[in-house]
Image (cartoon, helix red, strand yellow):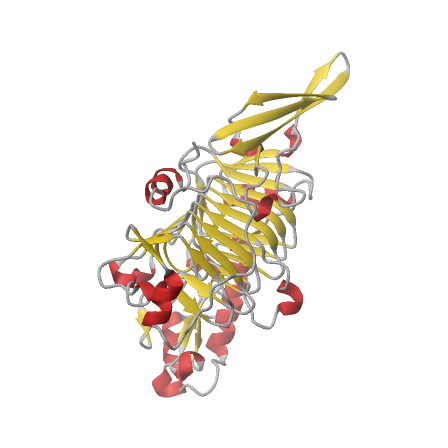
Length: 440
């Protein structure tokens, strides 16, 4: 809100901008007078009416109504966290300028209580420790203490009525975990976000049928028990720390990443649009437990459209319970991933509606693996194109994987959609316009 003094009185001017396609329409309210004007202030833009589940009911406006005292430009992680805390739930805008690092001092800054990775590896080597019990002892205690220190530093809690926007084409966050938890009305736009690296993964000897596995914490963005969220024109990636460069211990990759964008625990009315998700393993859970019907049933309503998924191994998305609309996305599976990938995961009581998407597979990749069944839940999968060819994903899946038969018909039809493009045109459209720095 811009405050202007005039003869001893204060006139407050609020500008919010609704984005329709690539056209911004600003509504300026001065006193009781409203007029429309063109606008390009990303920080004041709001989710347009009809643009996915995030537009349902009250819509998603973030901090568009923020006054001048609640608009912040930040260049460090400390400034970013301070701005989040300032002003409580009053509408606020936080402009991230440049790439700000949540872990500028490296993992060494979090080590405490004698944790030493080499000693940890010696203590829990399956050849010595076995695979019959979880890791316990001094090194595990030290790992937990060190992890707690990292947790406090790299998590940033986003309050209600907040817009976070990157300034220009090269702004965002390195190694931070954005927690949209128990709040309402949040917008994230134009940010490049590098997934946080768990400095202290836990070895679970009993995991993966008692062959053991490394488990990590920290989703890049987590929407937890929140409603009306718009995640738009961001780039989310492992960045400098791809999984292929992680070491291998005990025959398993030292996994230091978790989800890129998880939407869980009764969250509702979320639109995820025009983002790039790239070079990552576990991408997006919508619902994170089969036993959470009391919390999740009737919620987890999410729309995903015009996103590009490039080099994502799994969960784009993996759905439980929610009515999830997935259209006009482009999925690119790499040569390295073709034997061990899936795109759409069908989970308990899910109502996935996936249409008008484009999928690019390398030679030799099984089309049937696009879908993966976890529970008996029908889905709608129509007018999807694989390598430029119209493909019935359910029929191909059932033919190629007969032990995992899927049923057609999600039981609902999405109505909150903007322009639905031809799936044959989607690779070009999304390739040119999705991601940070690409808001047209």
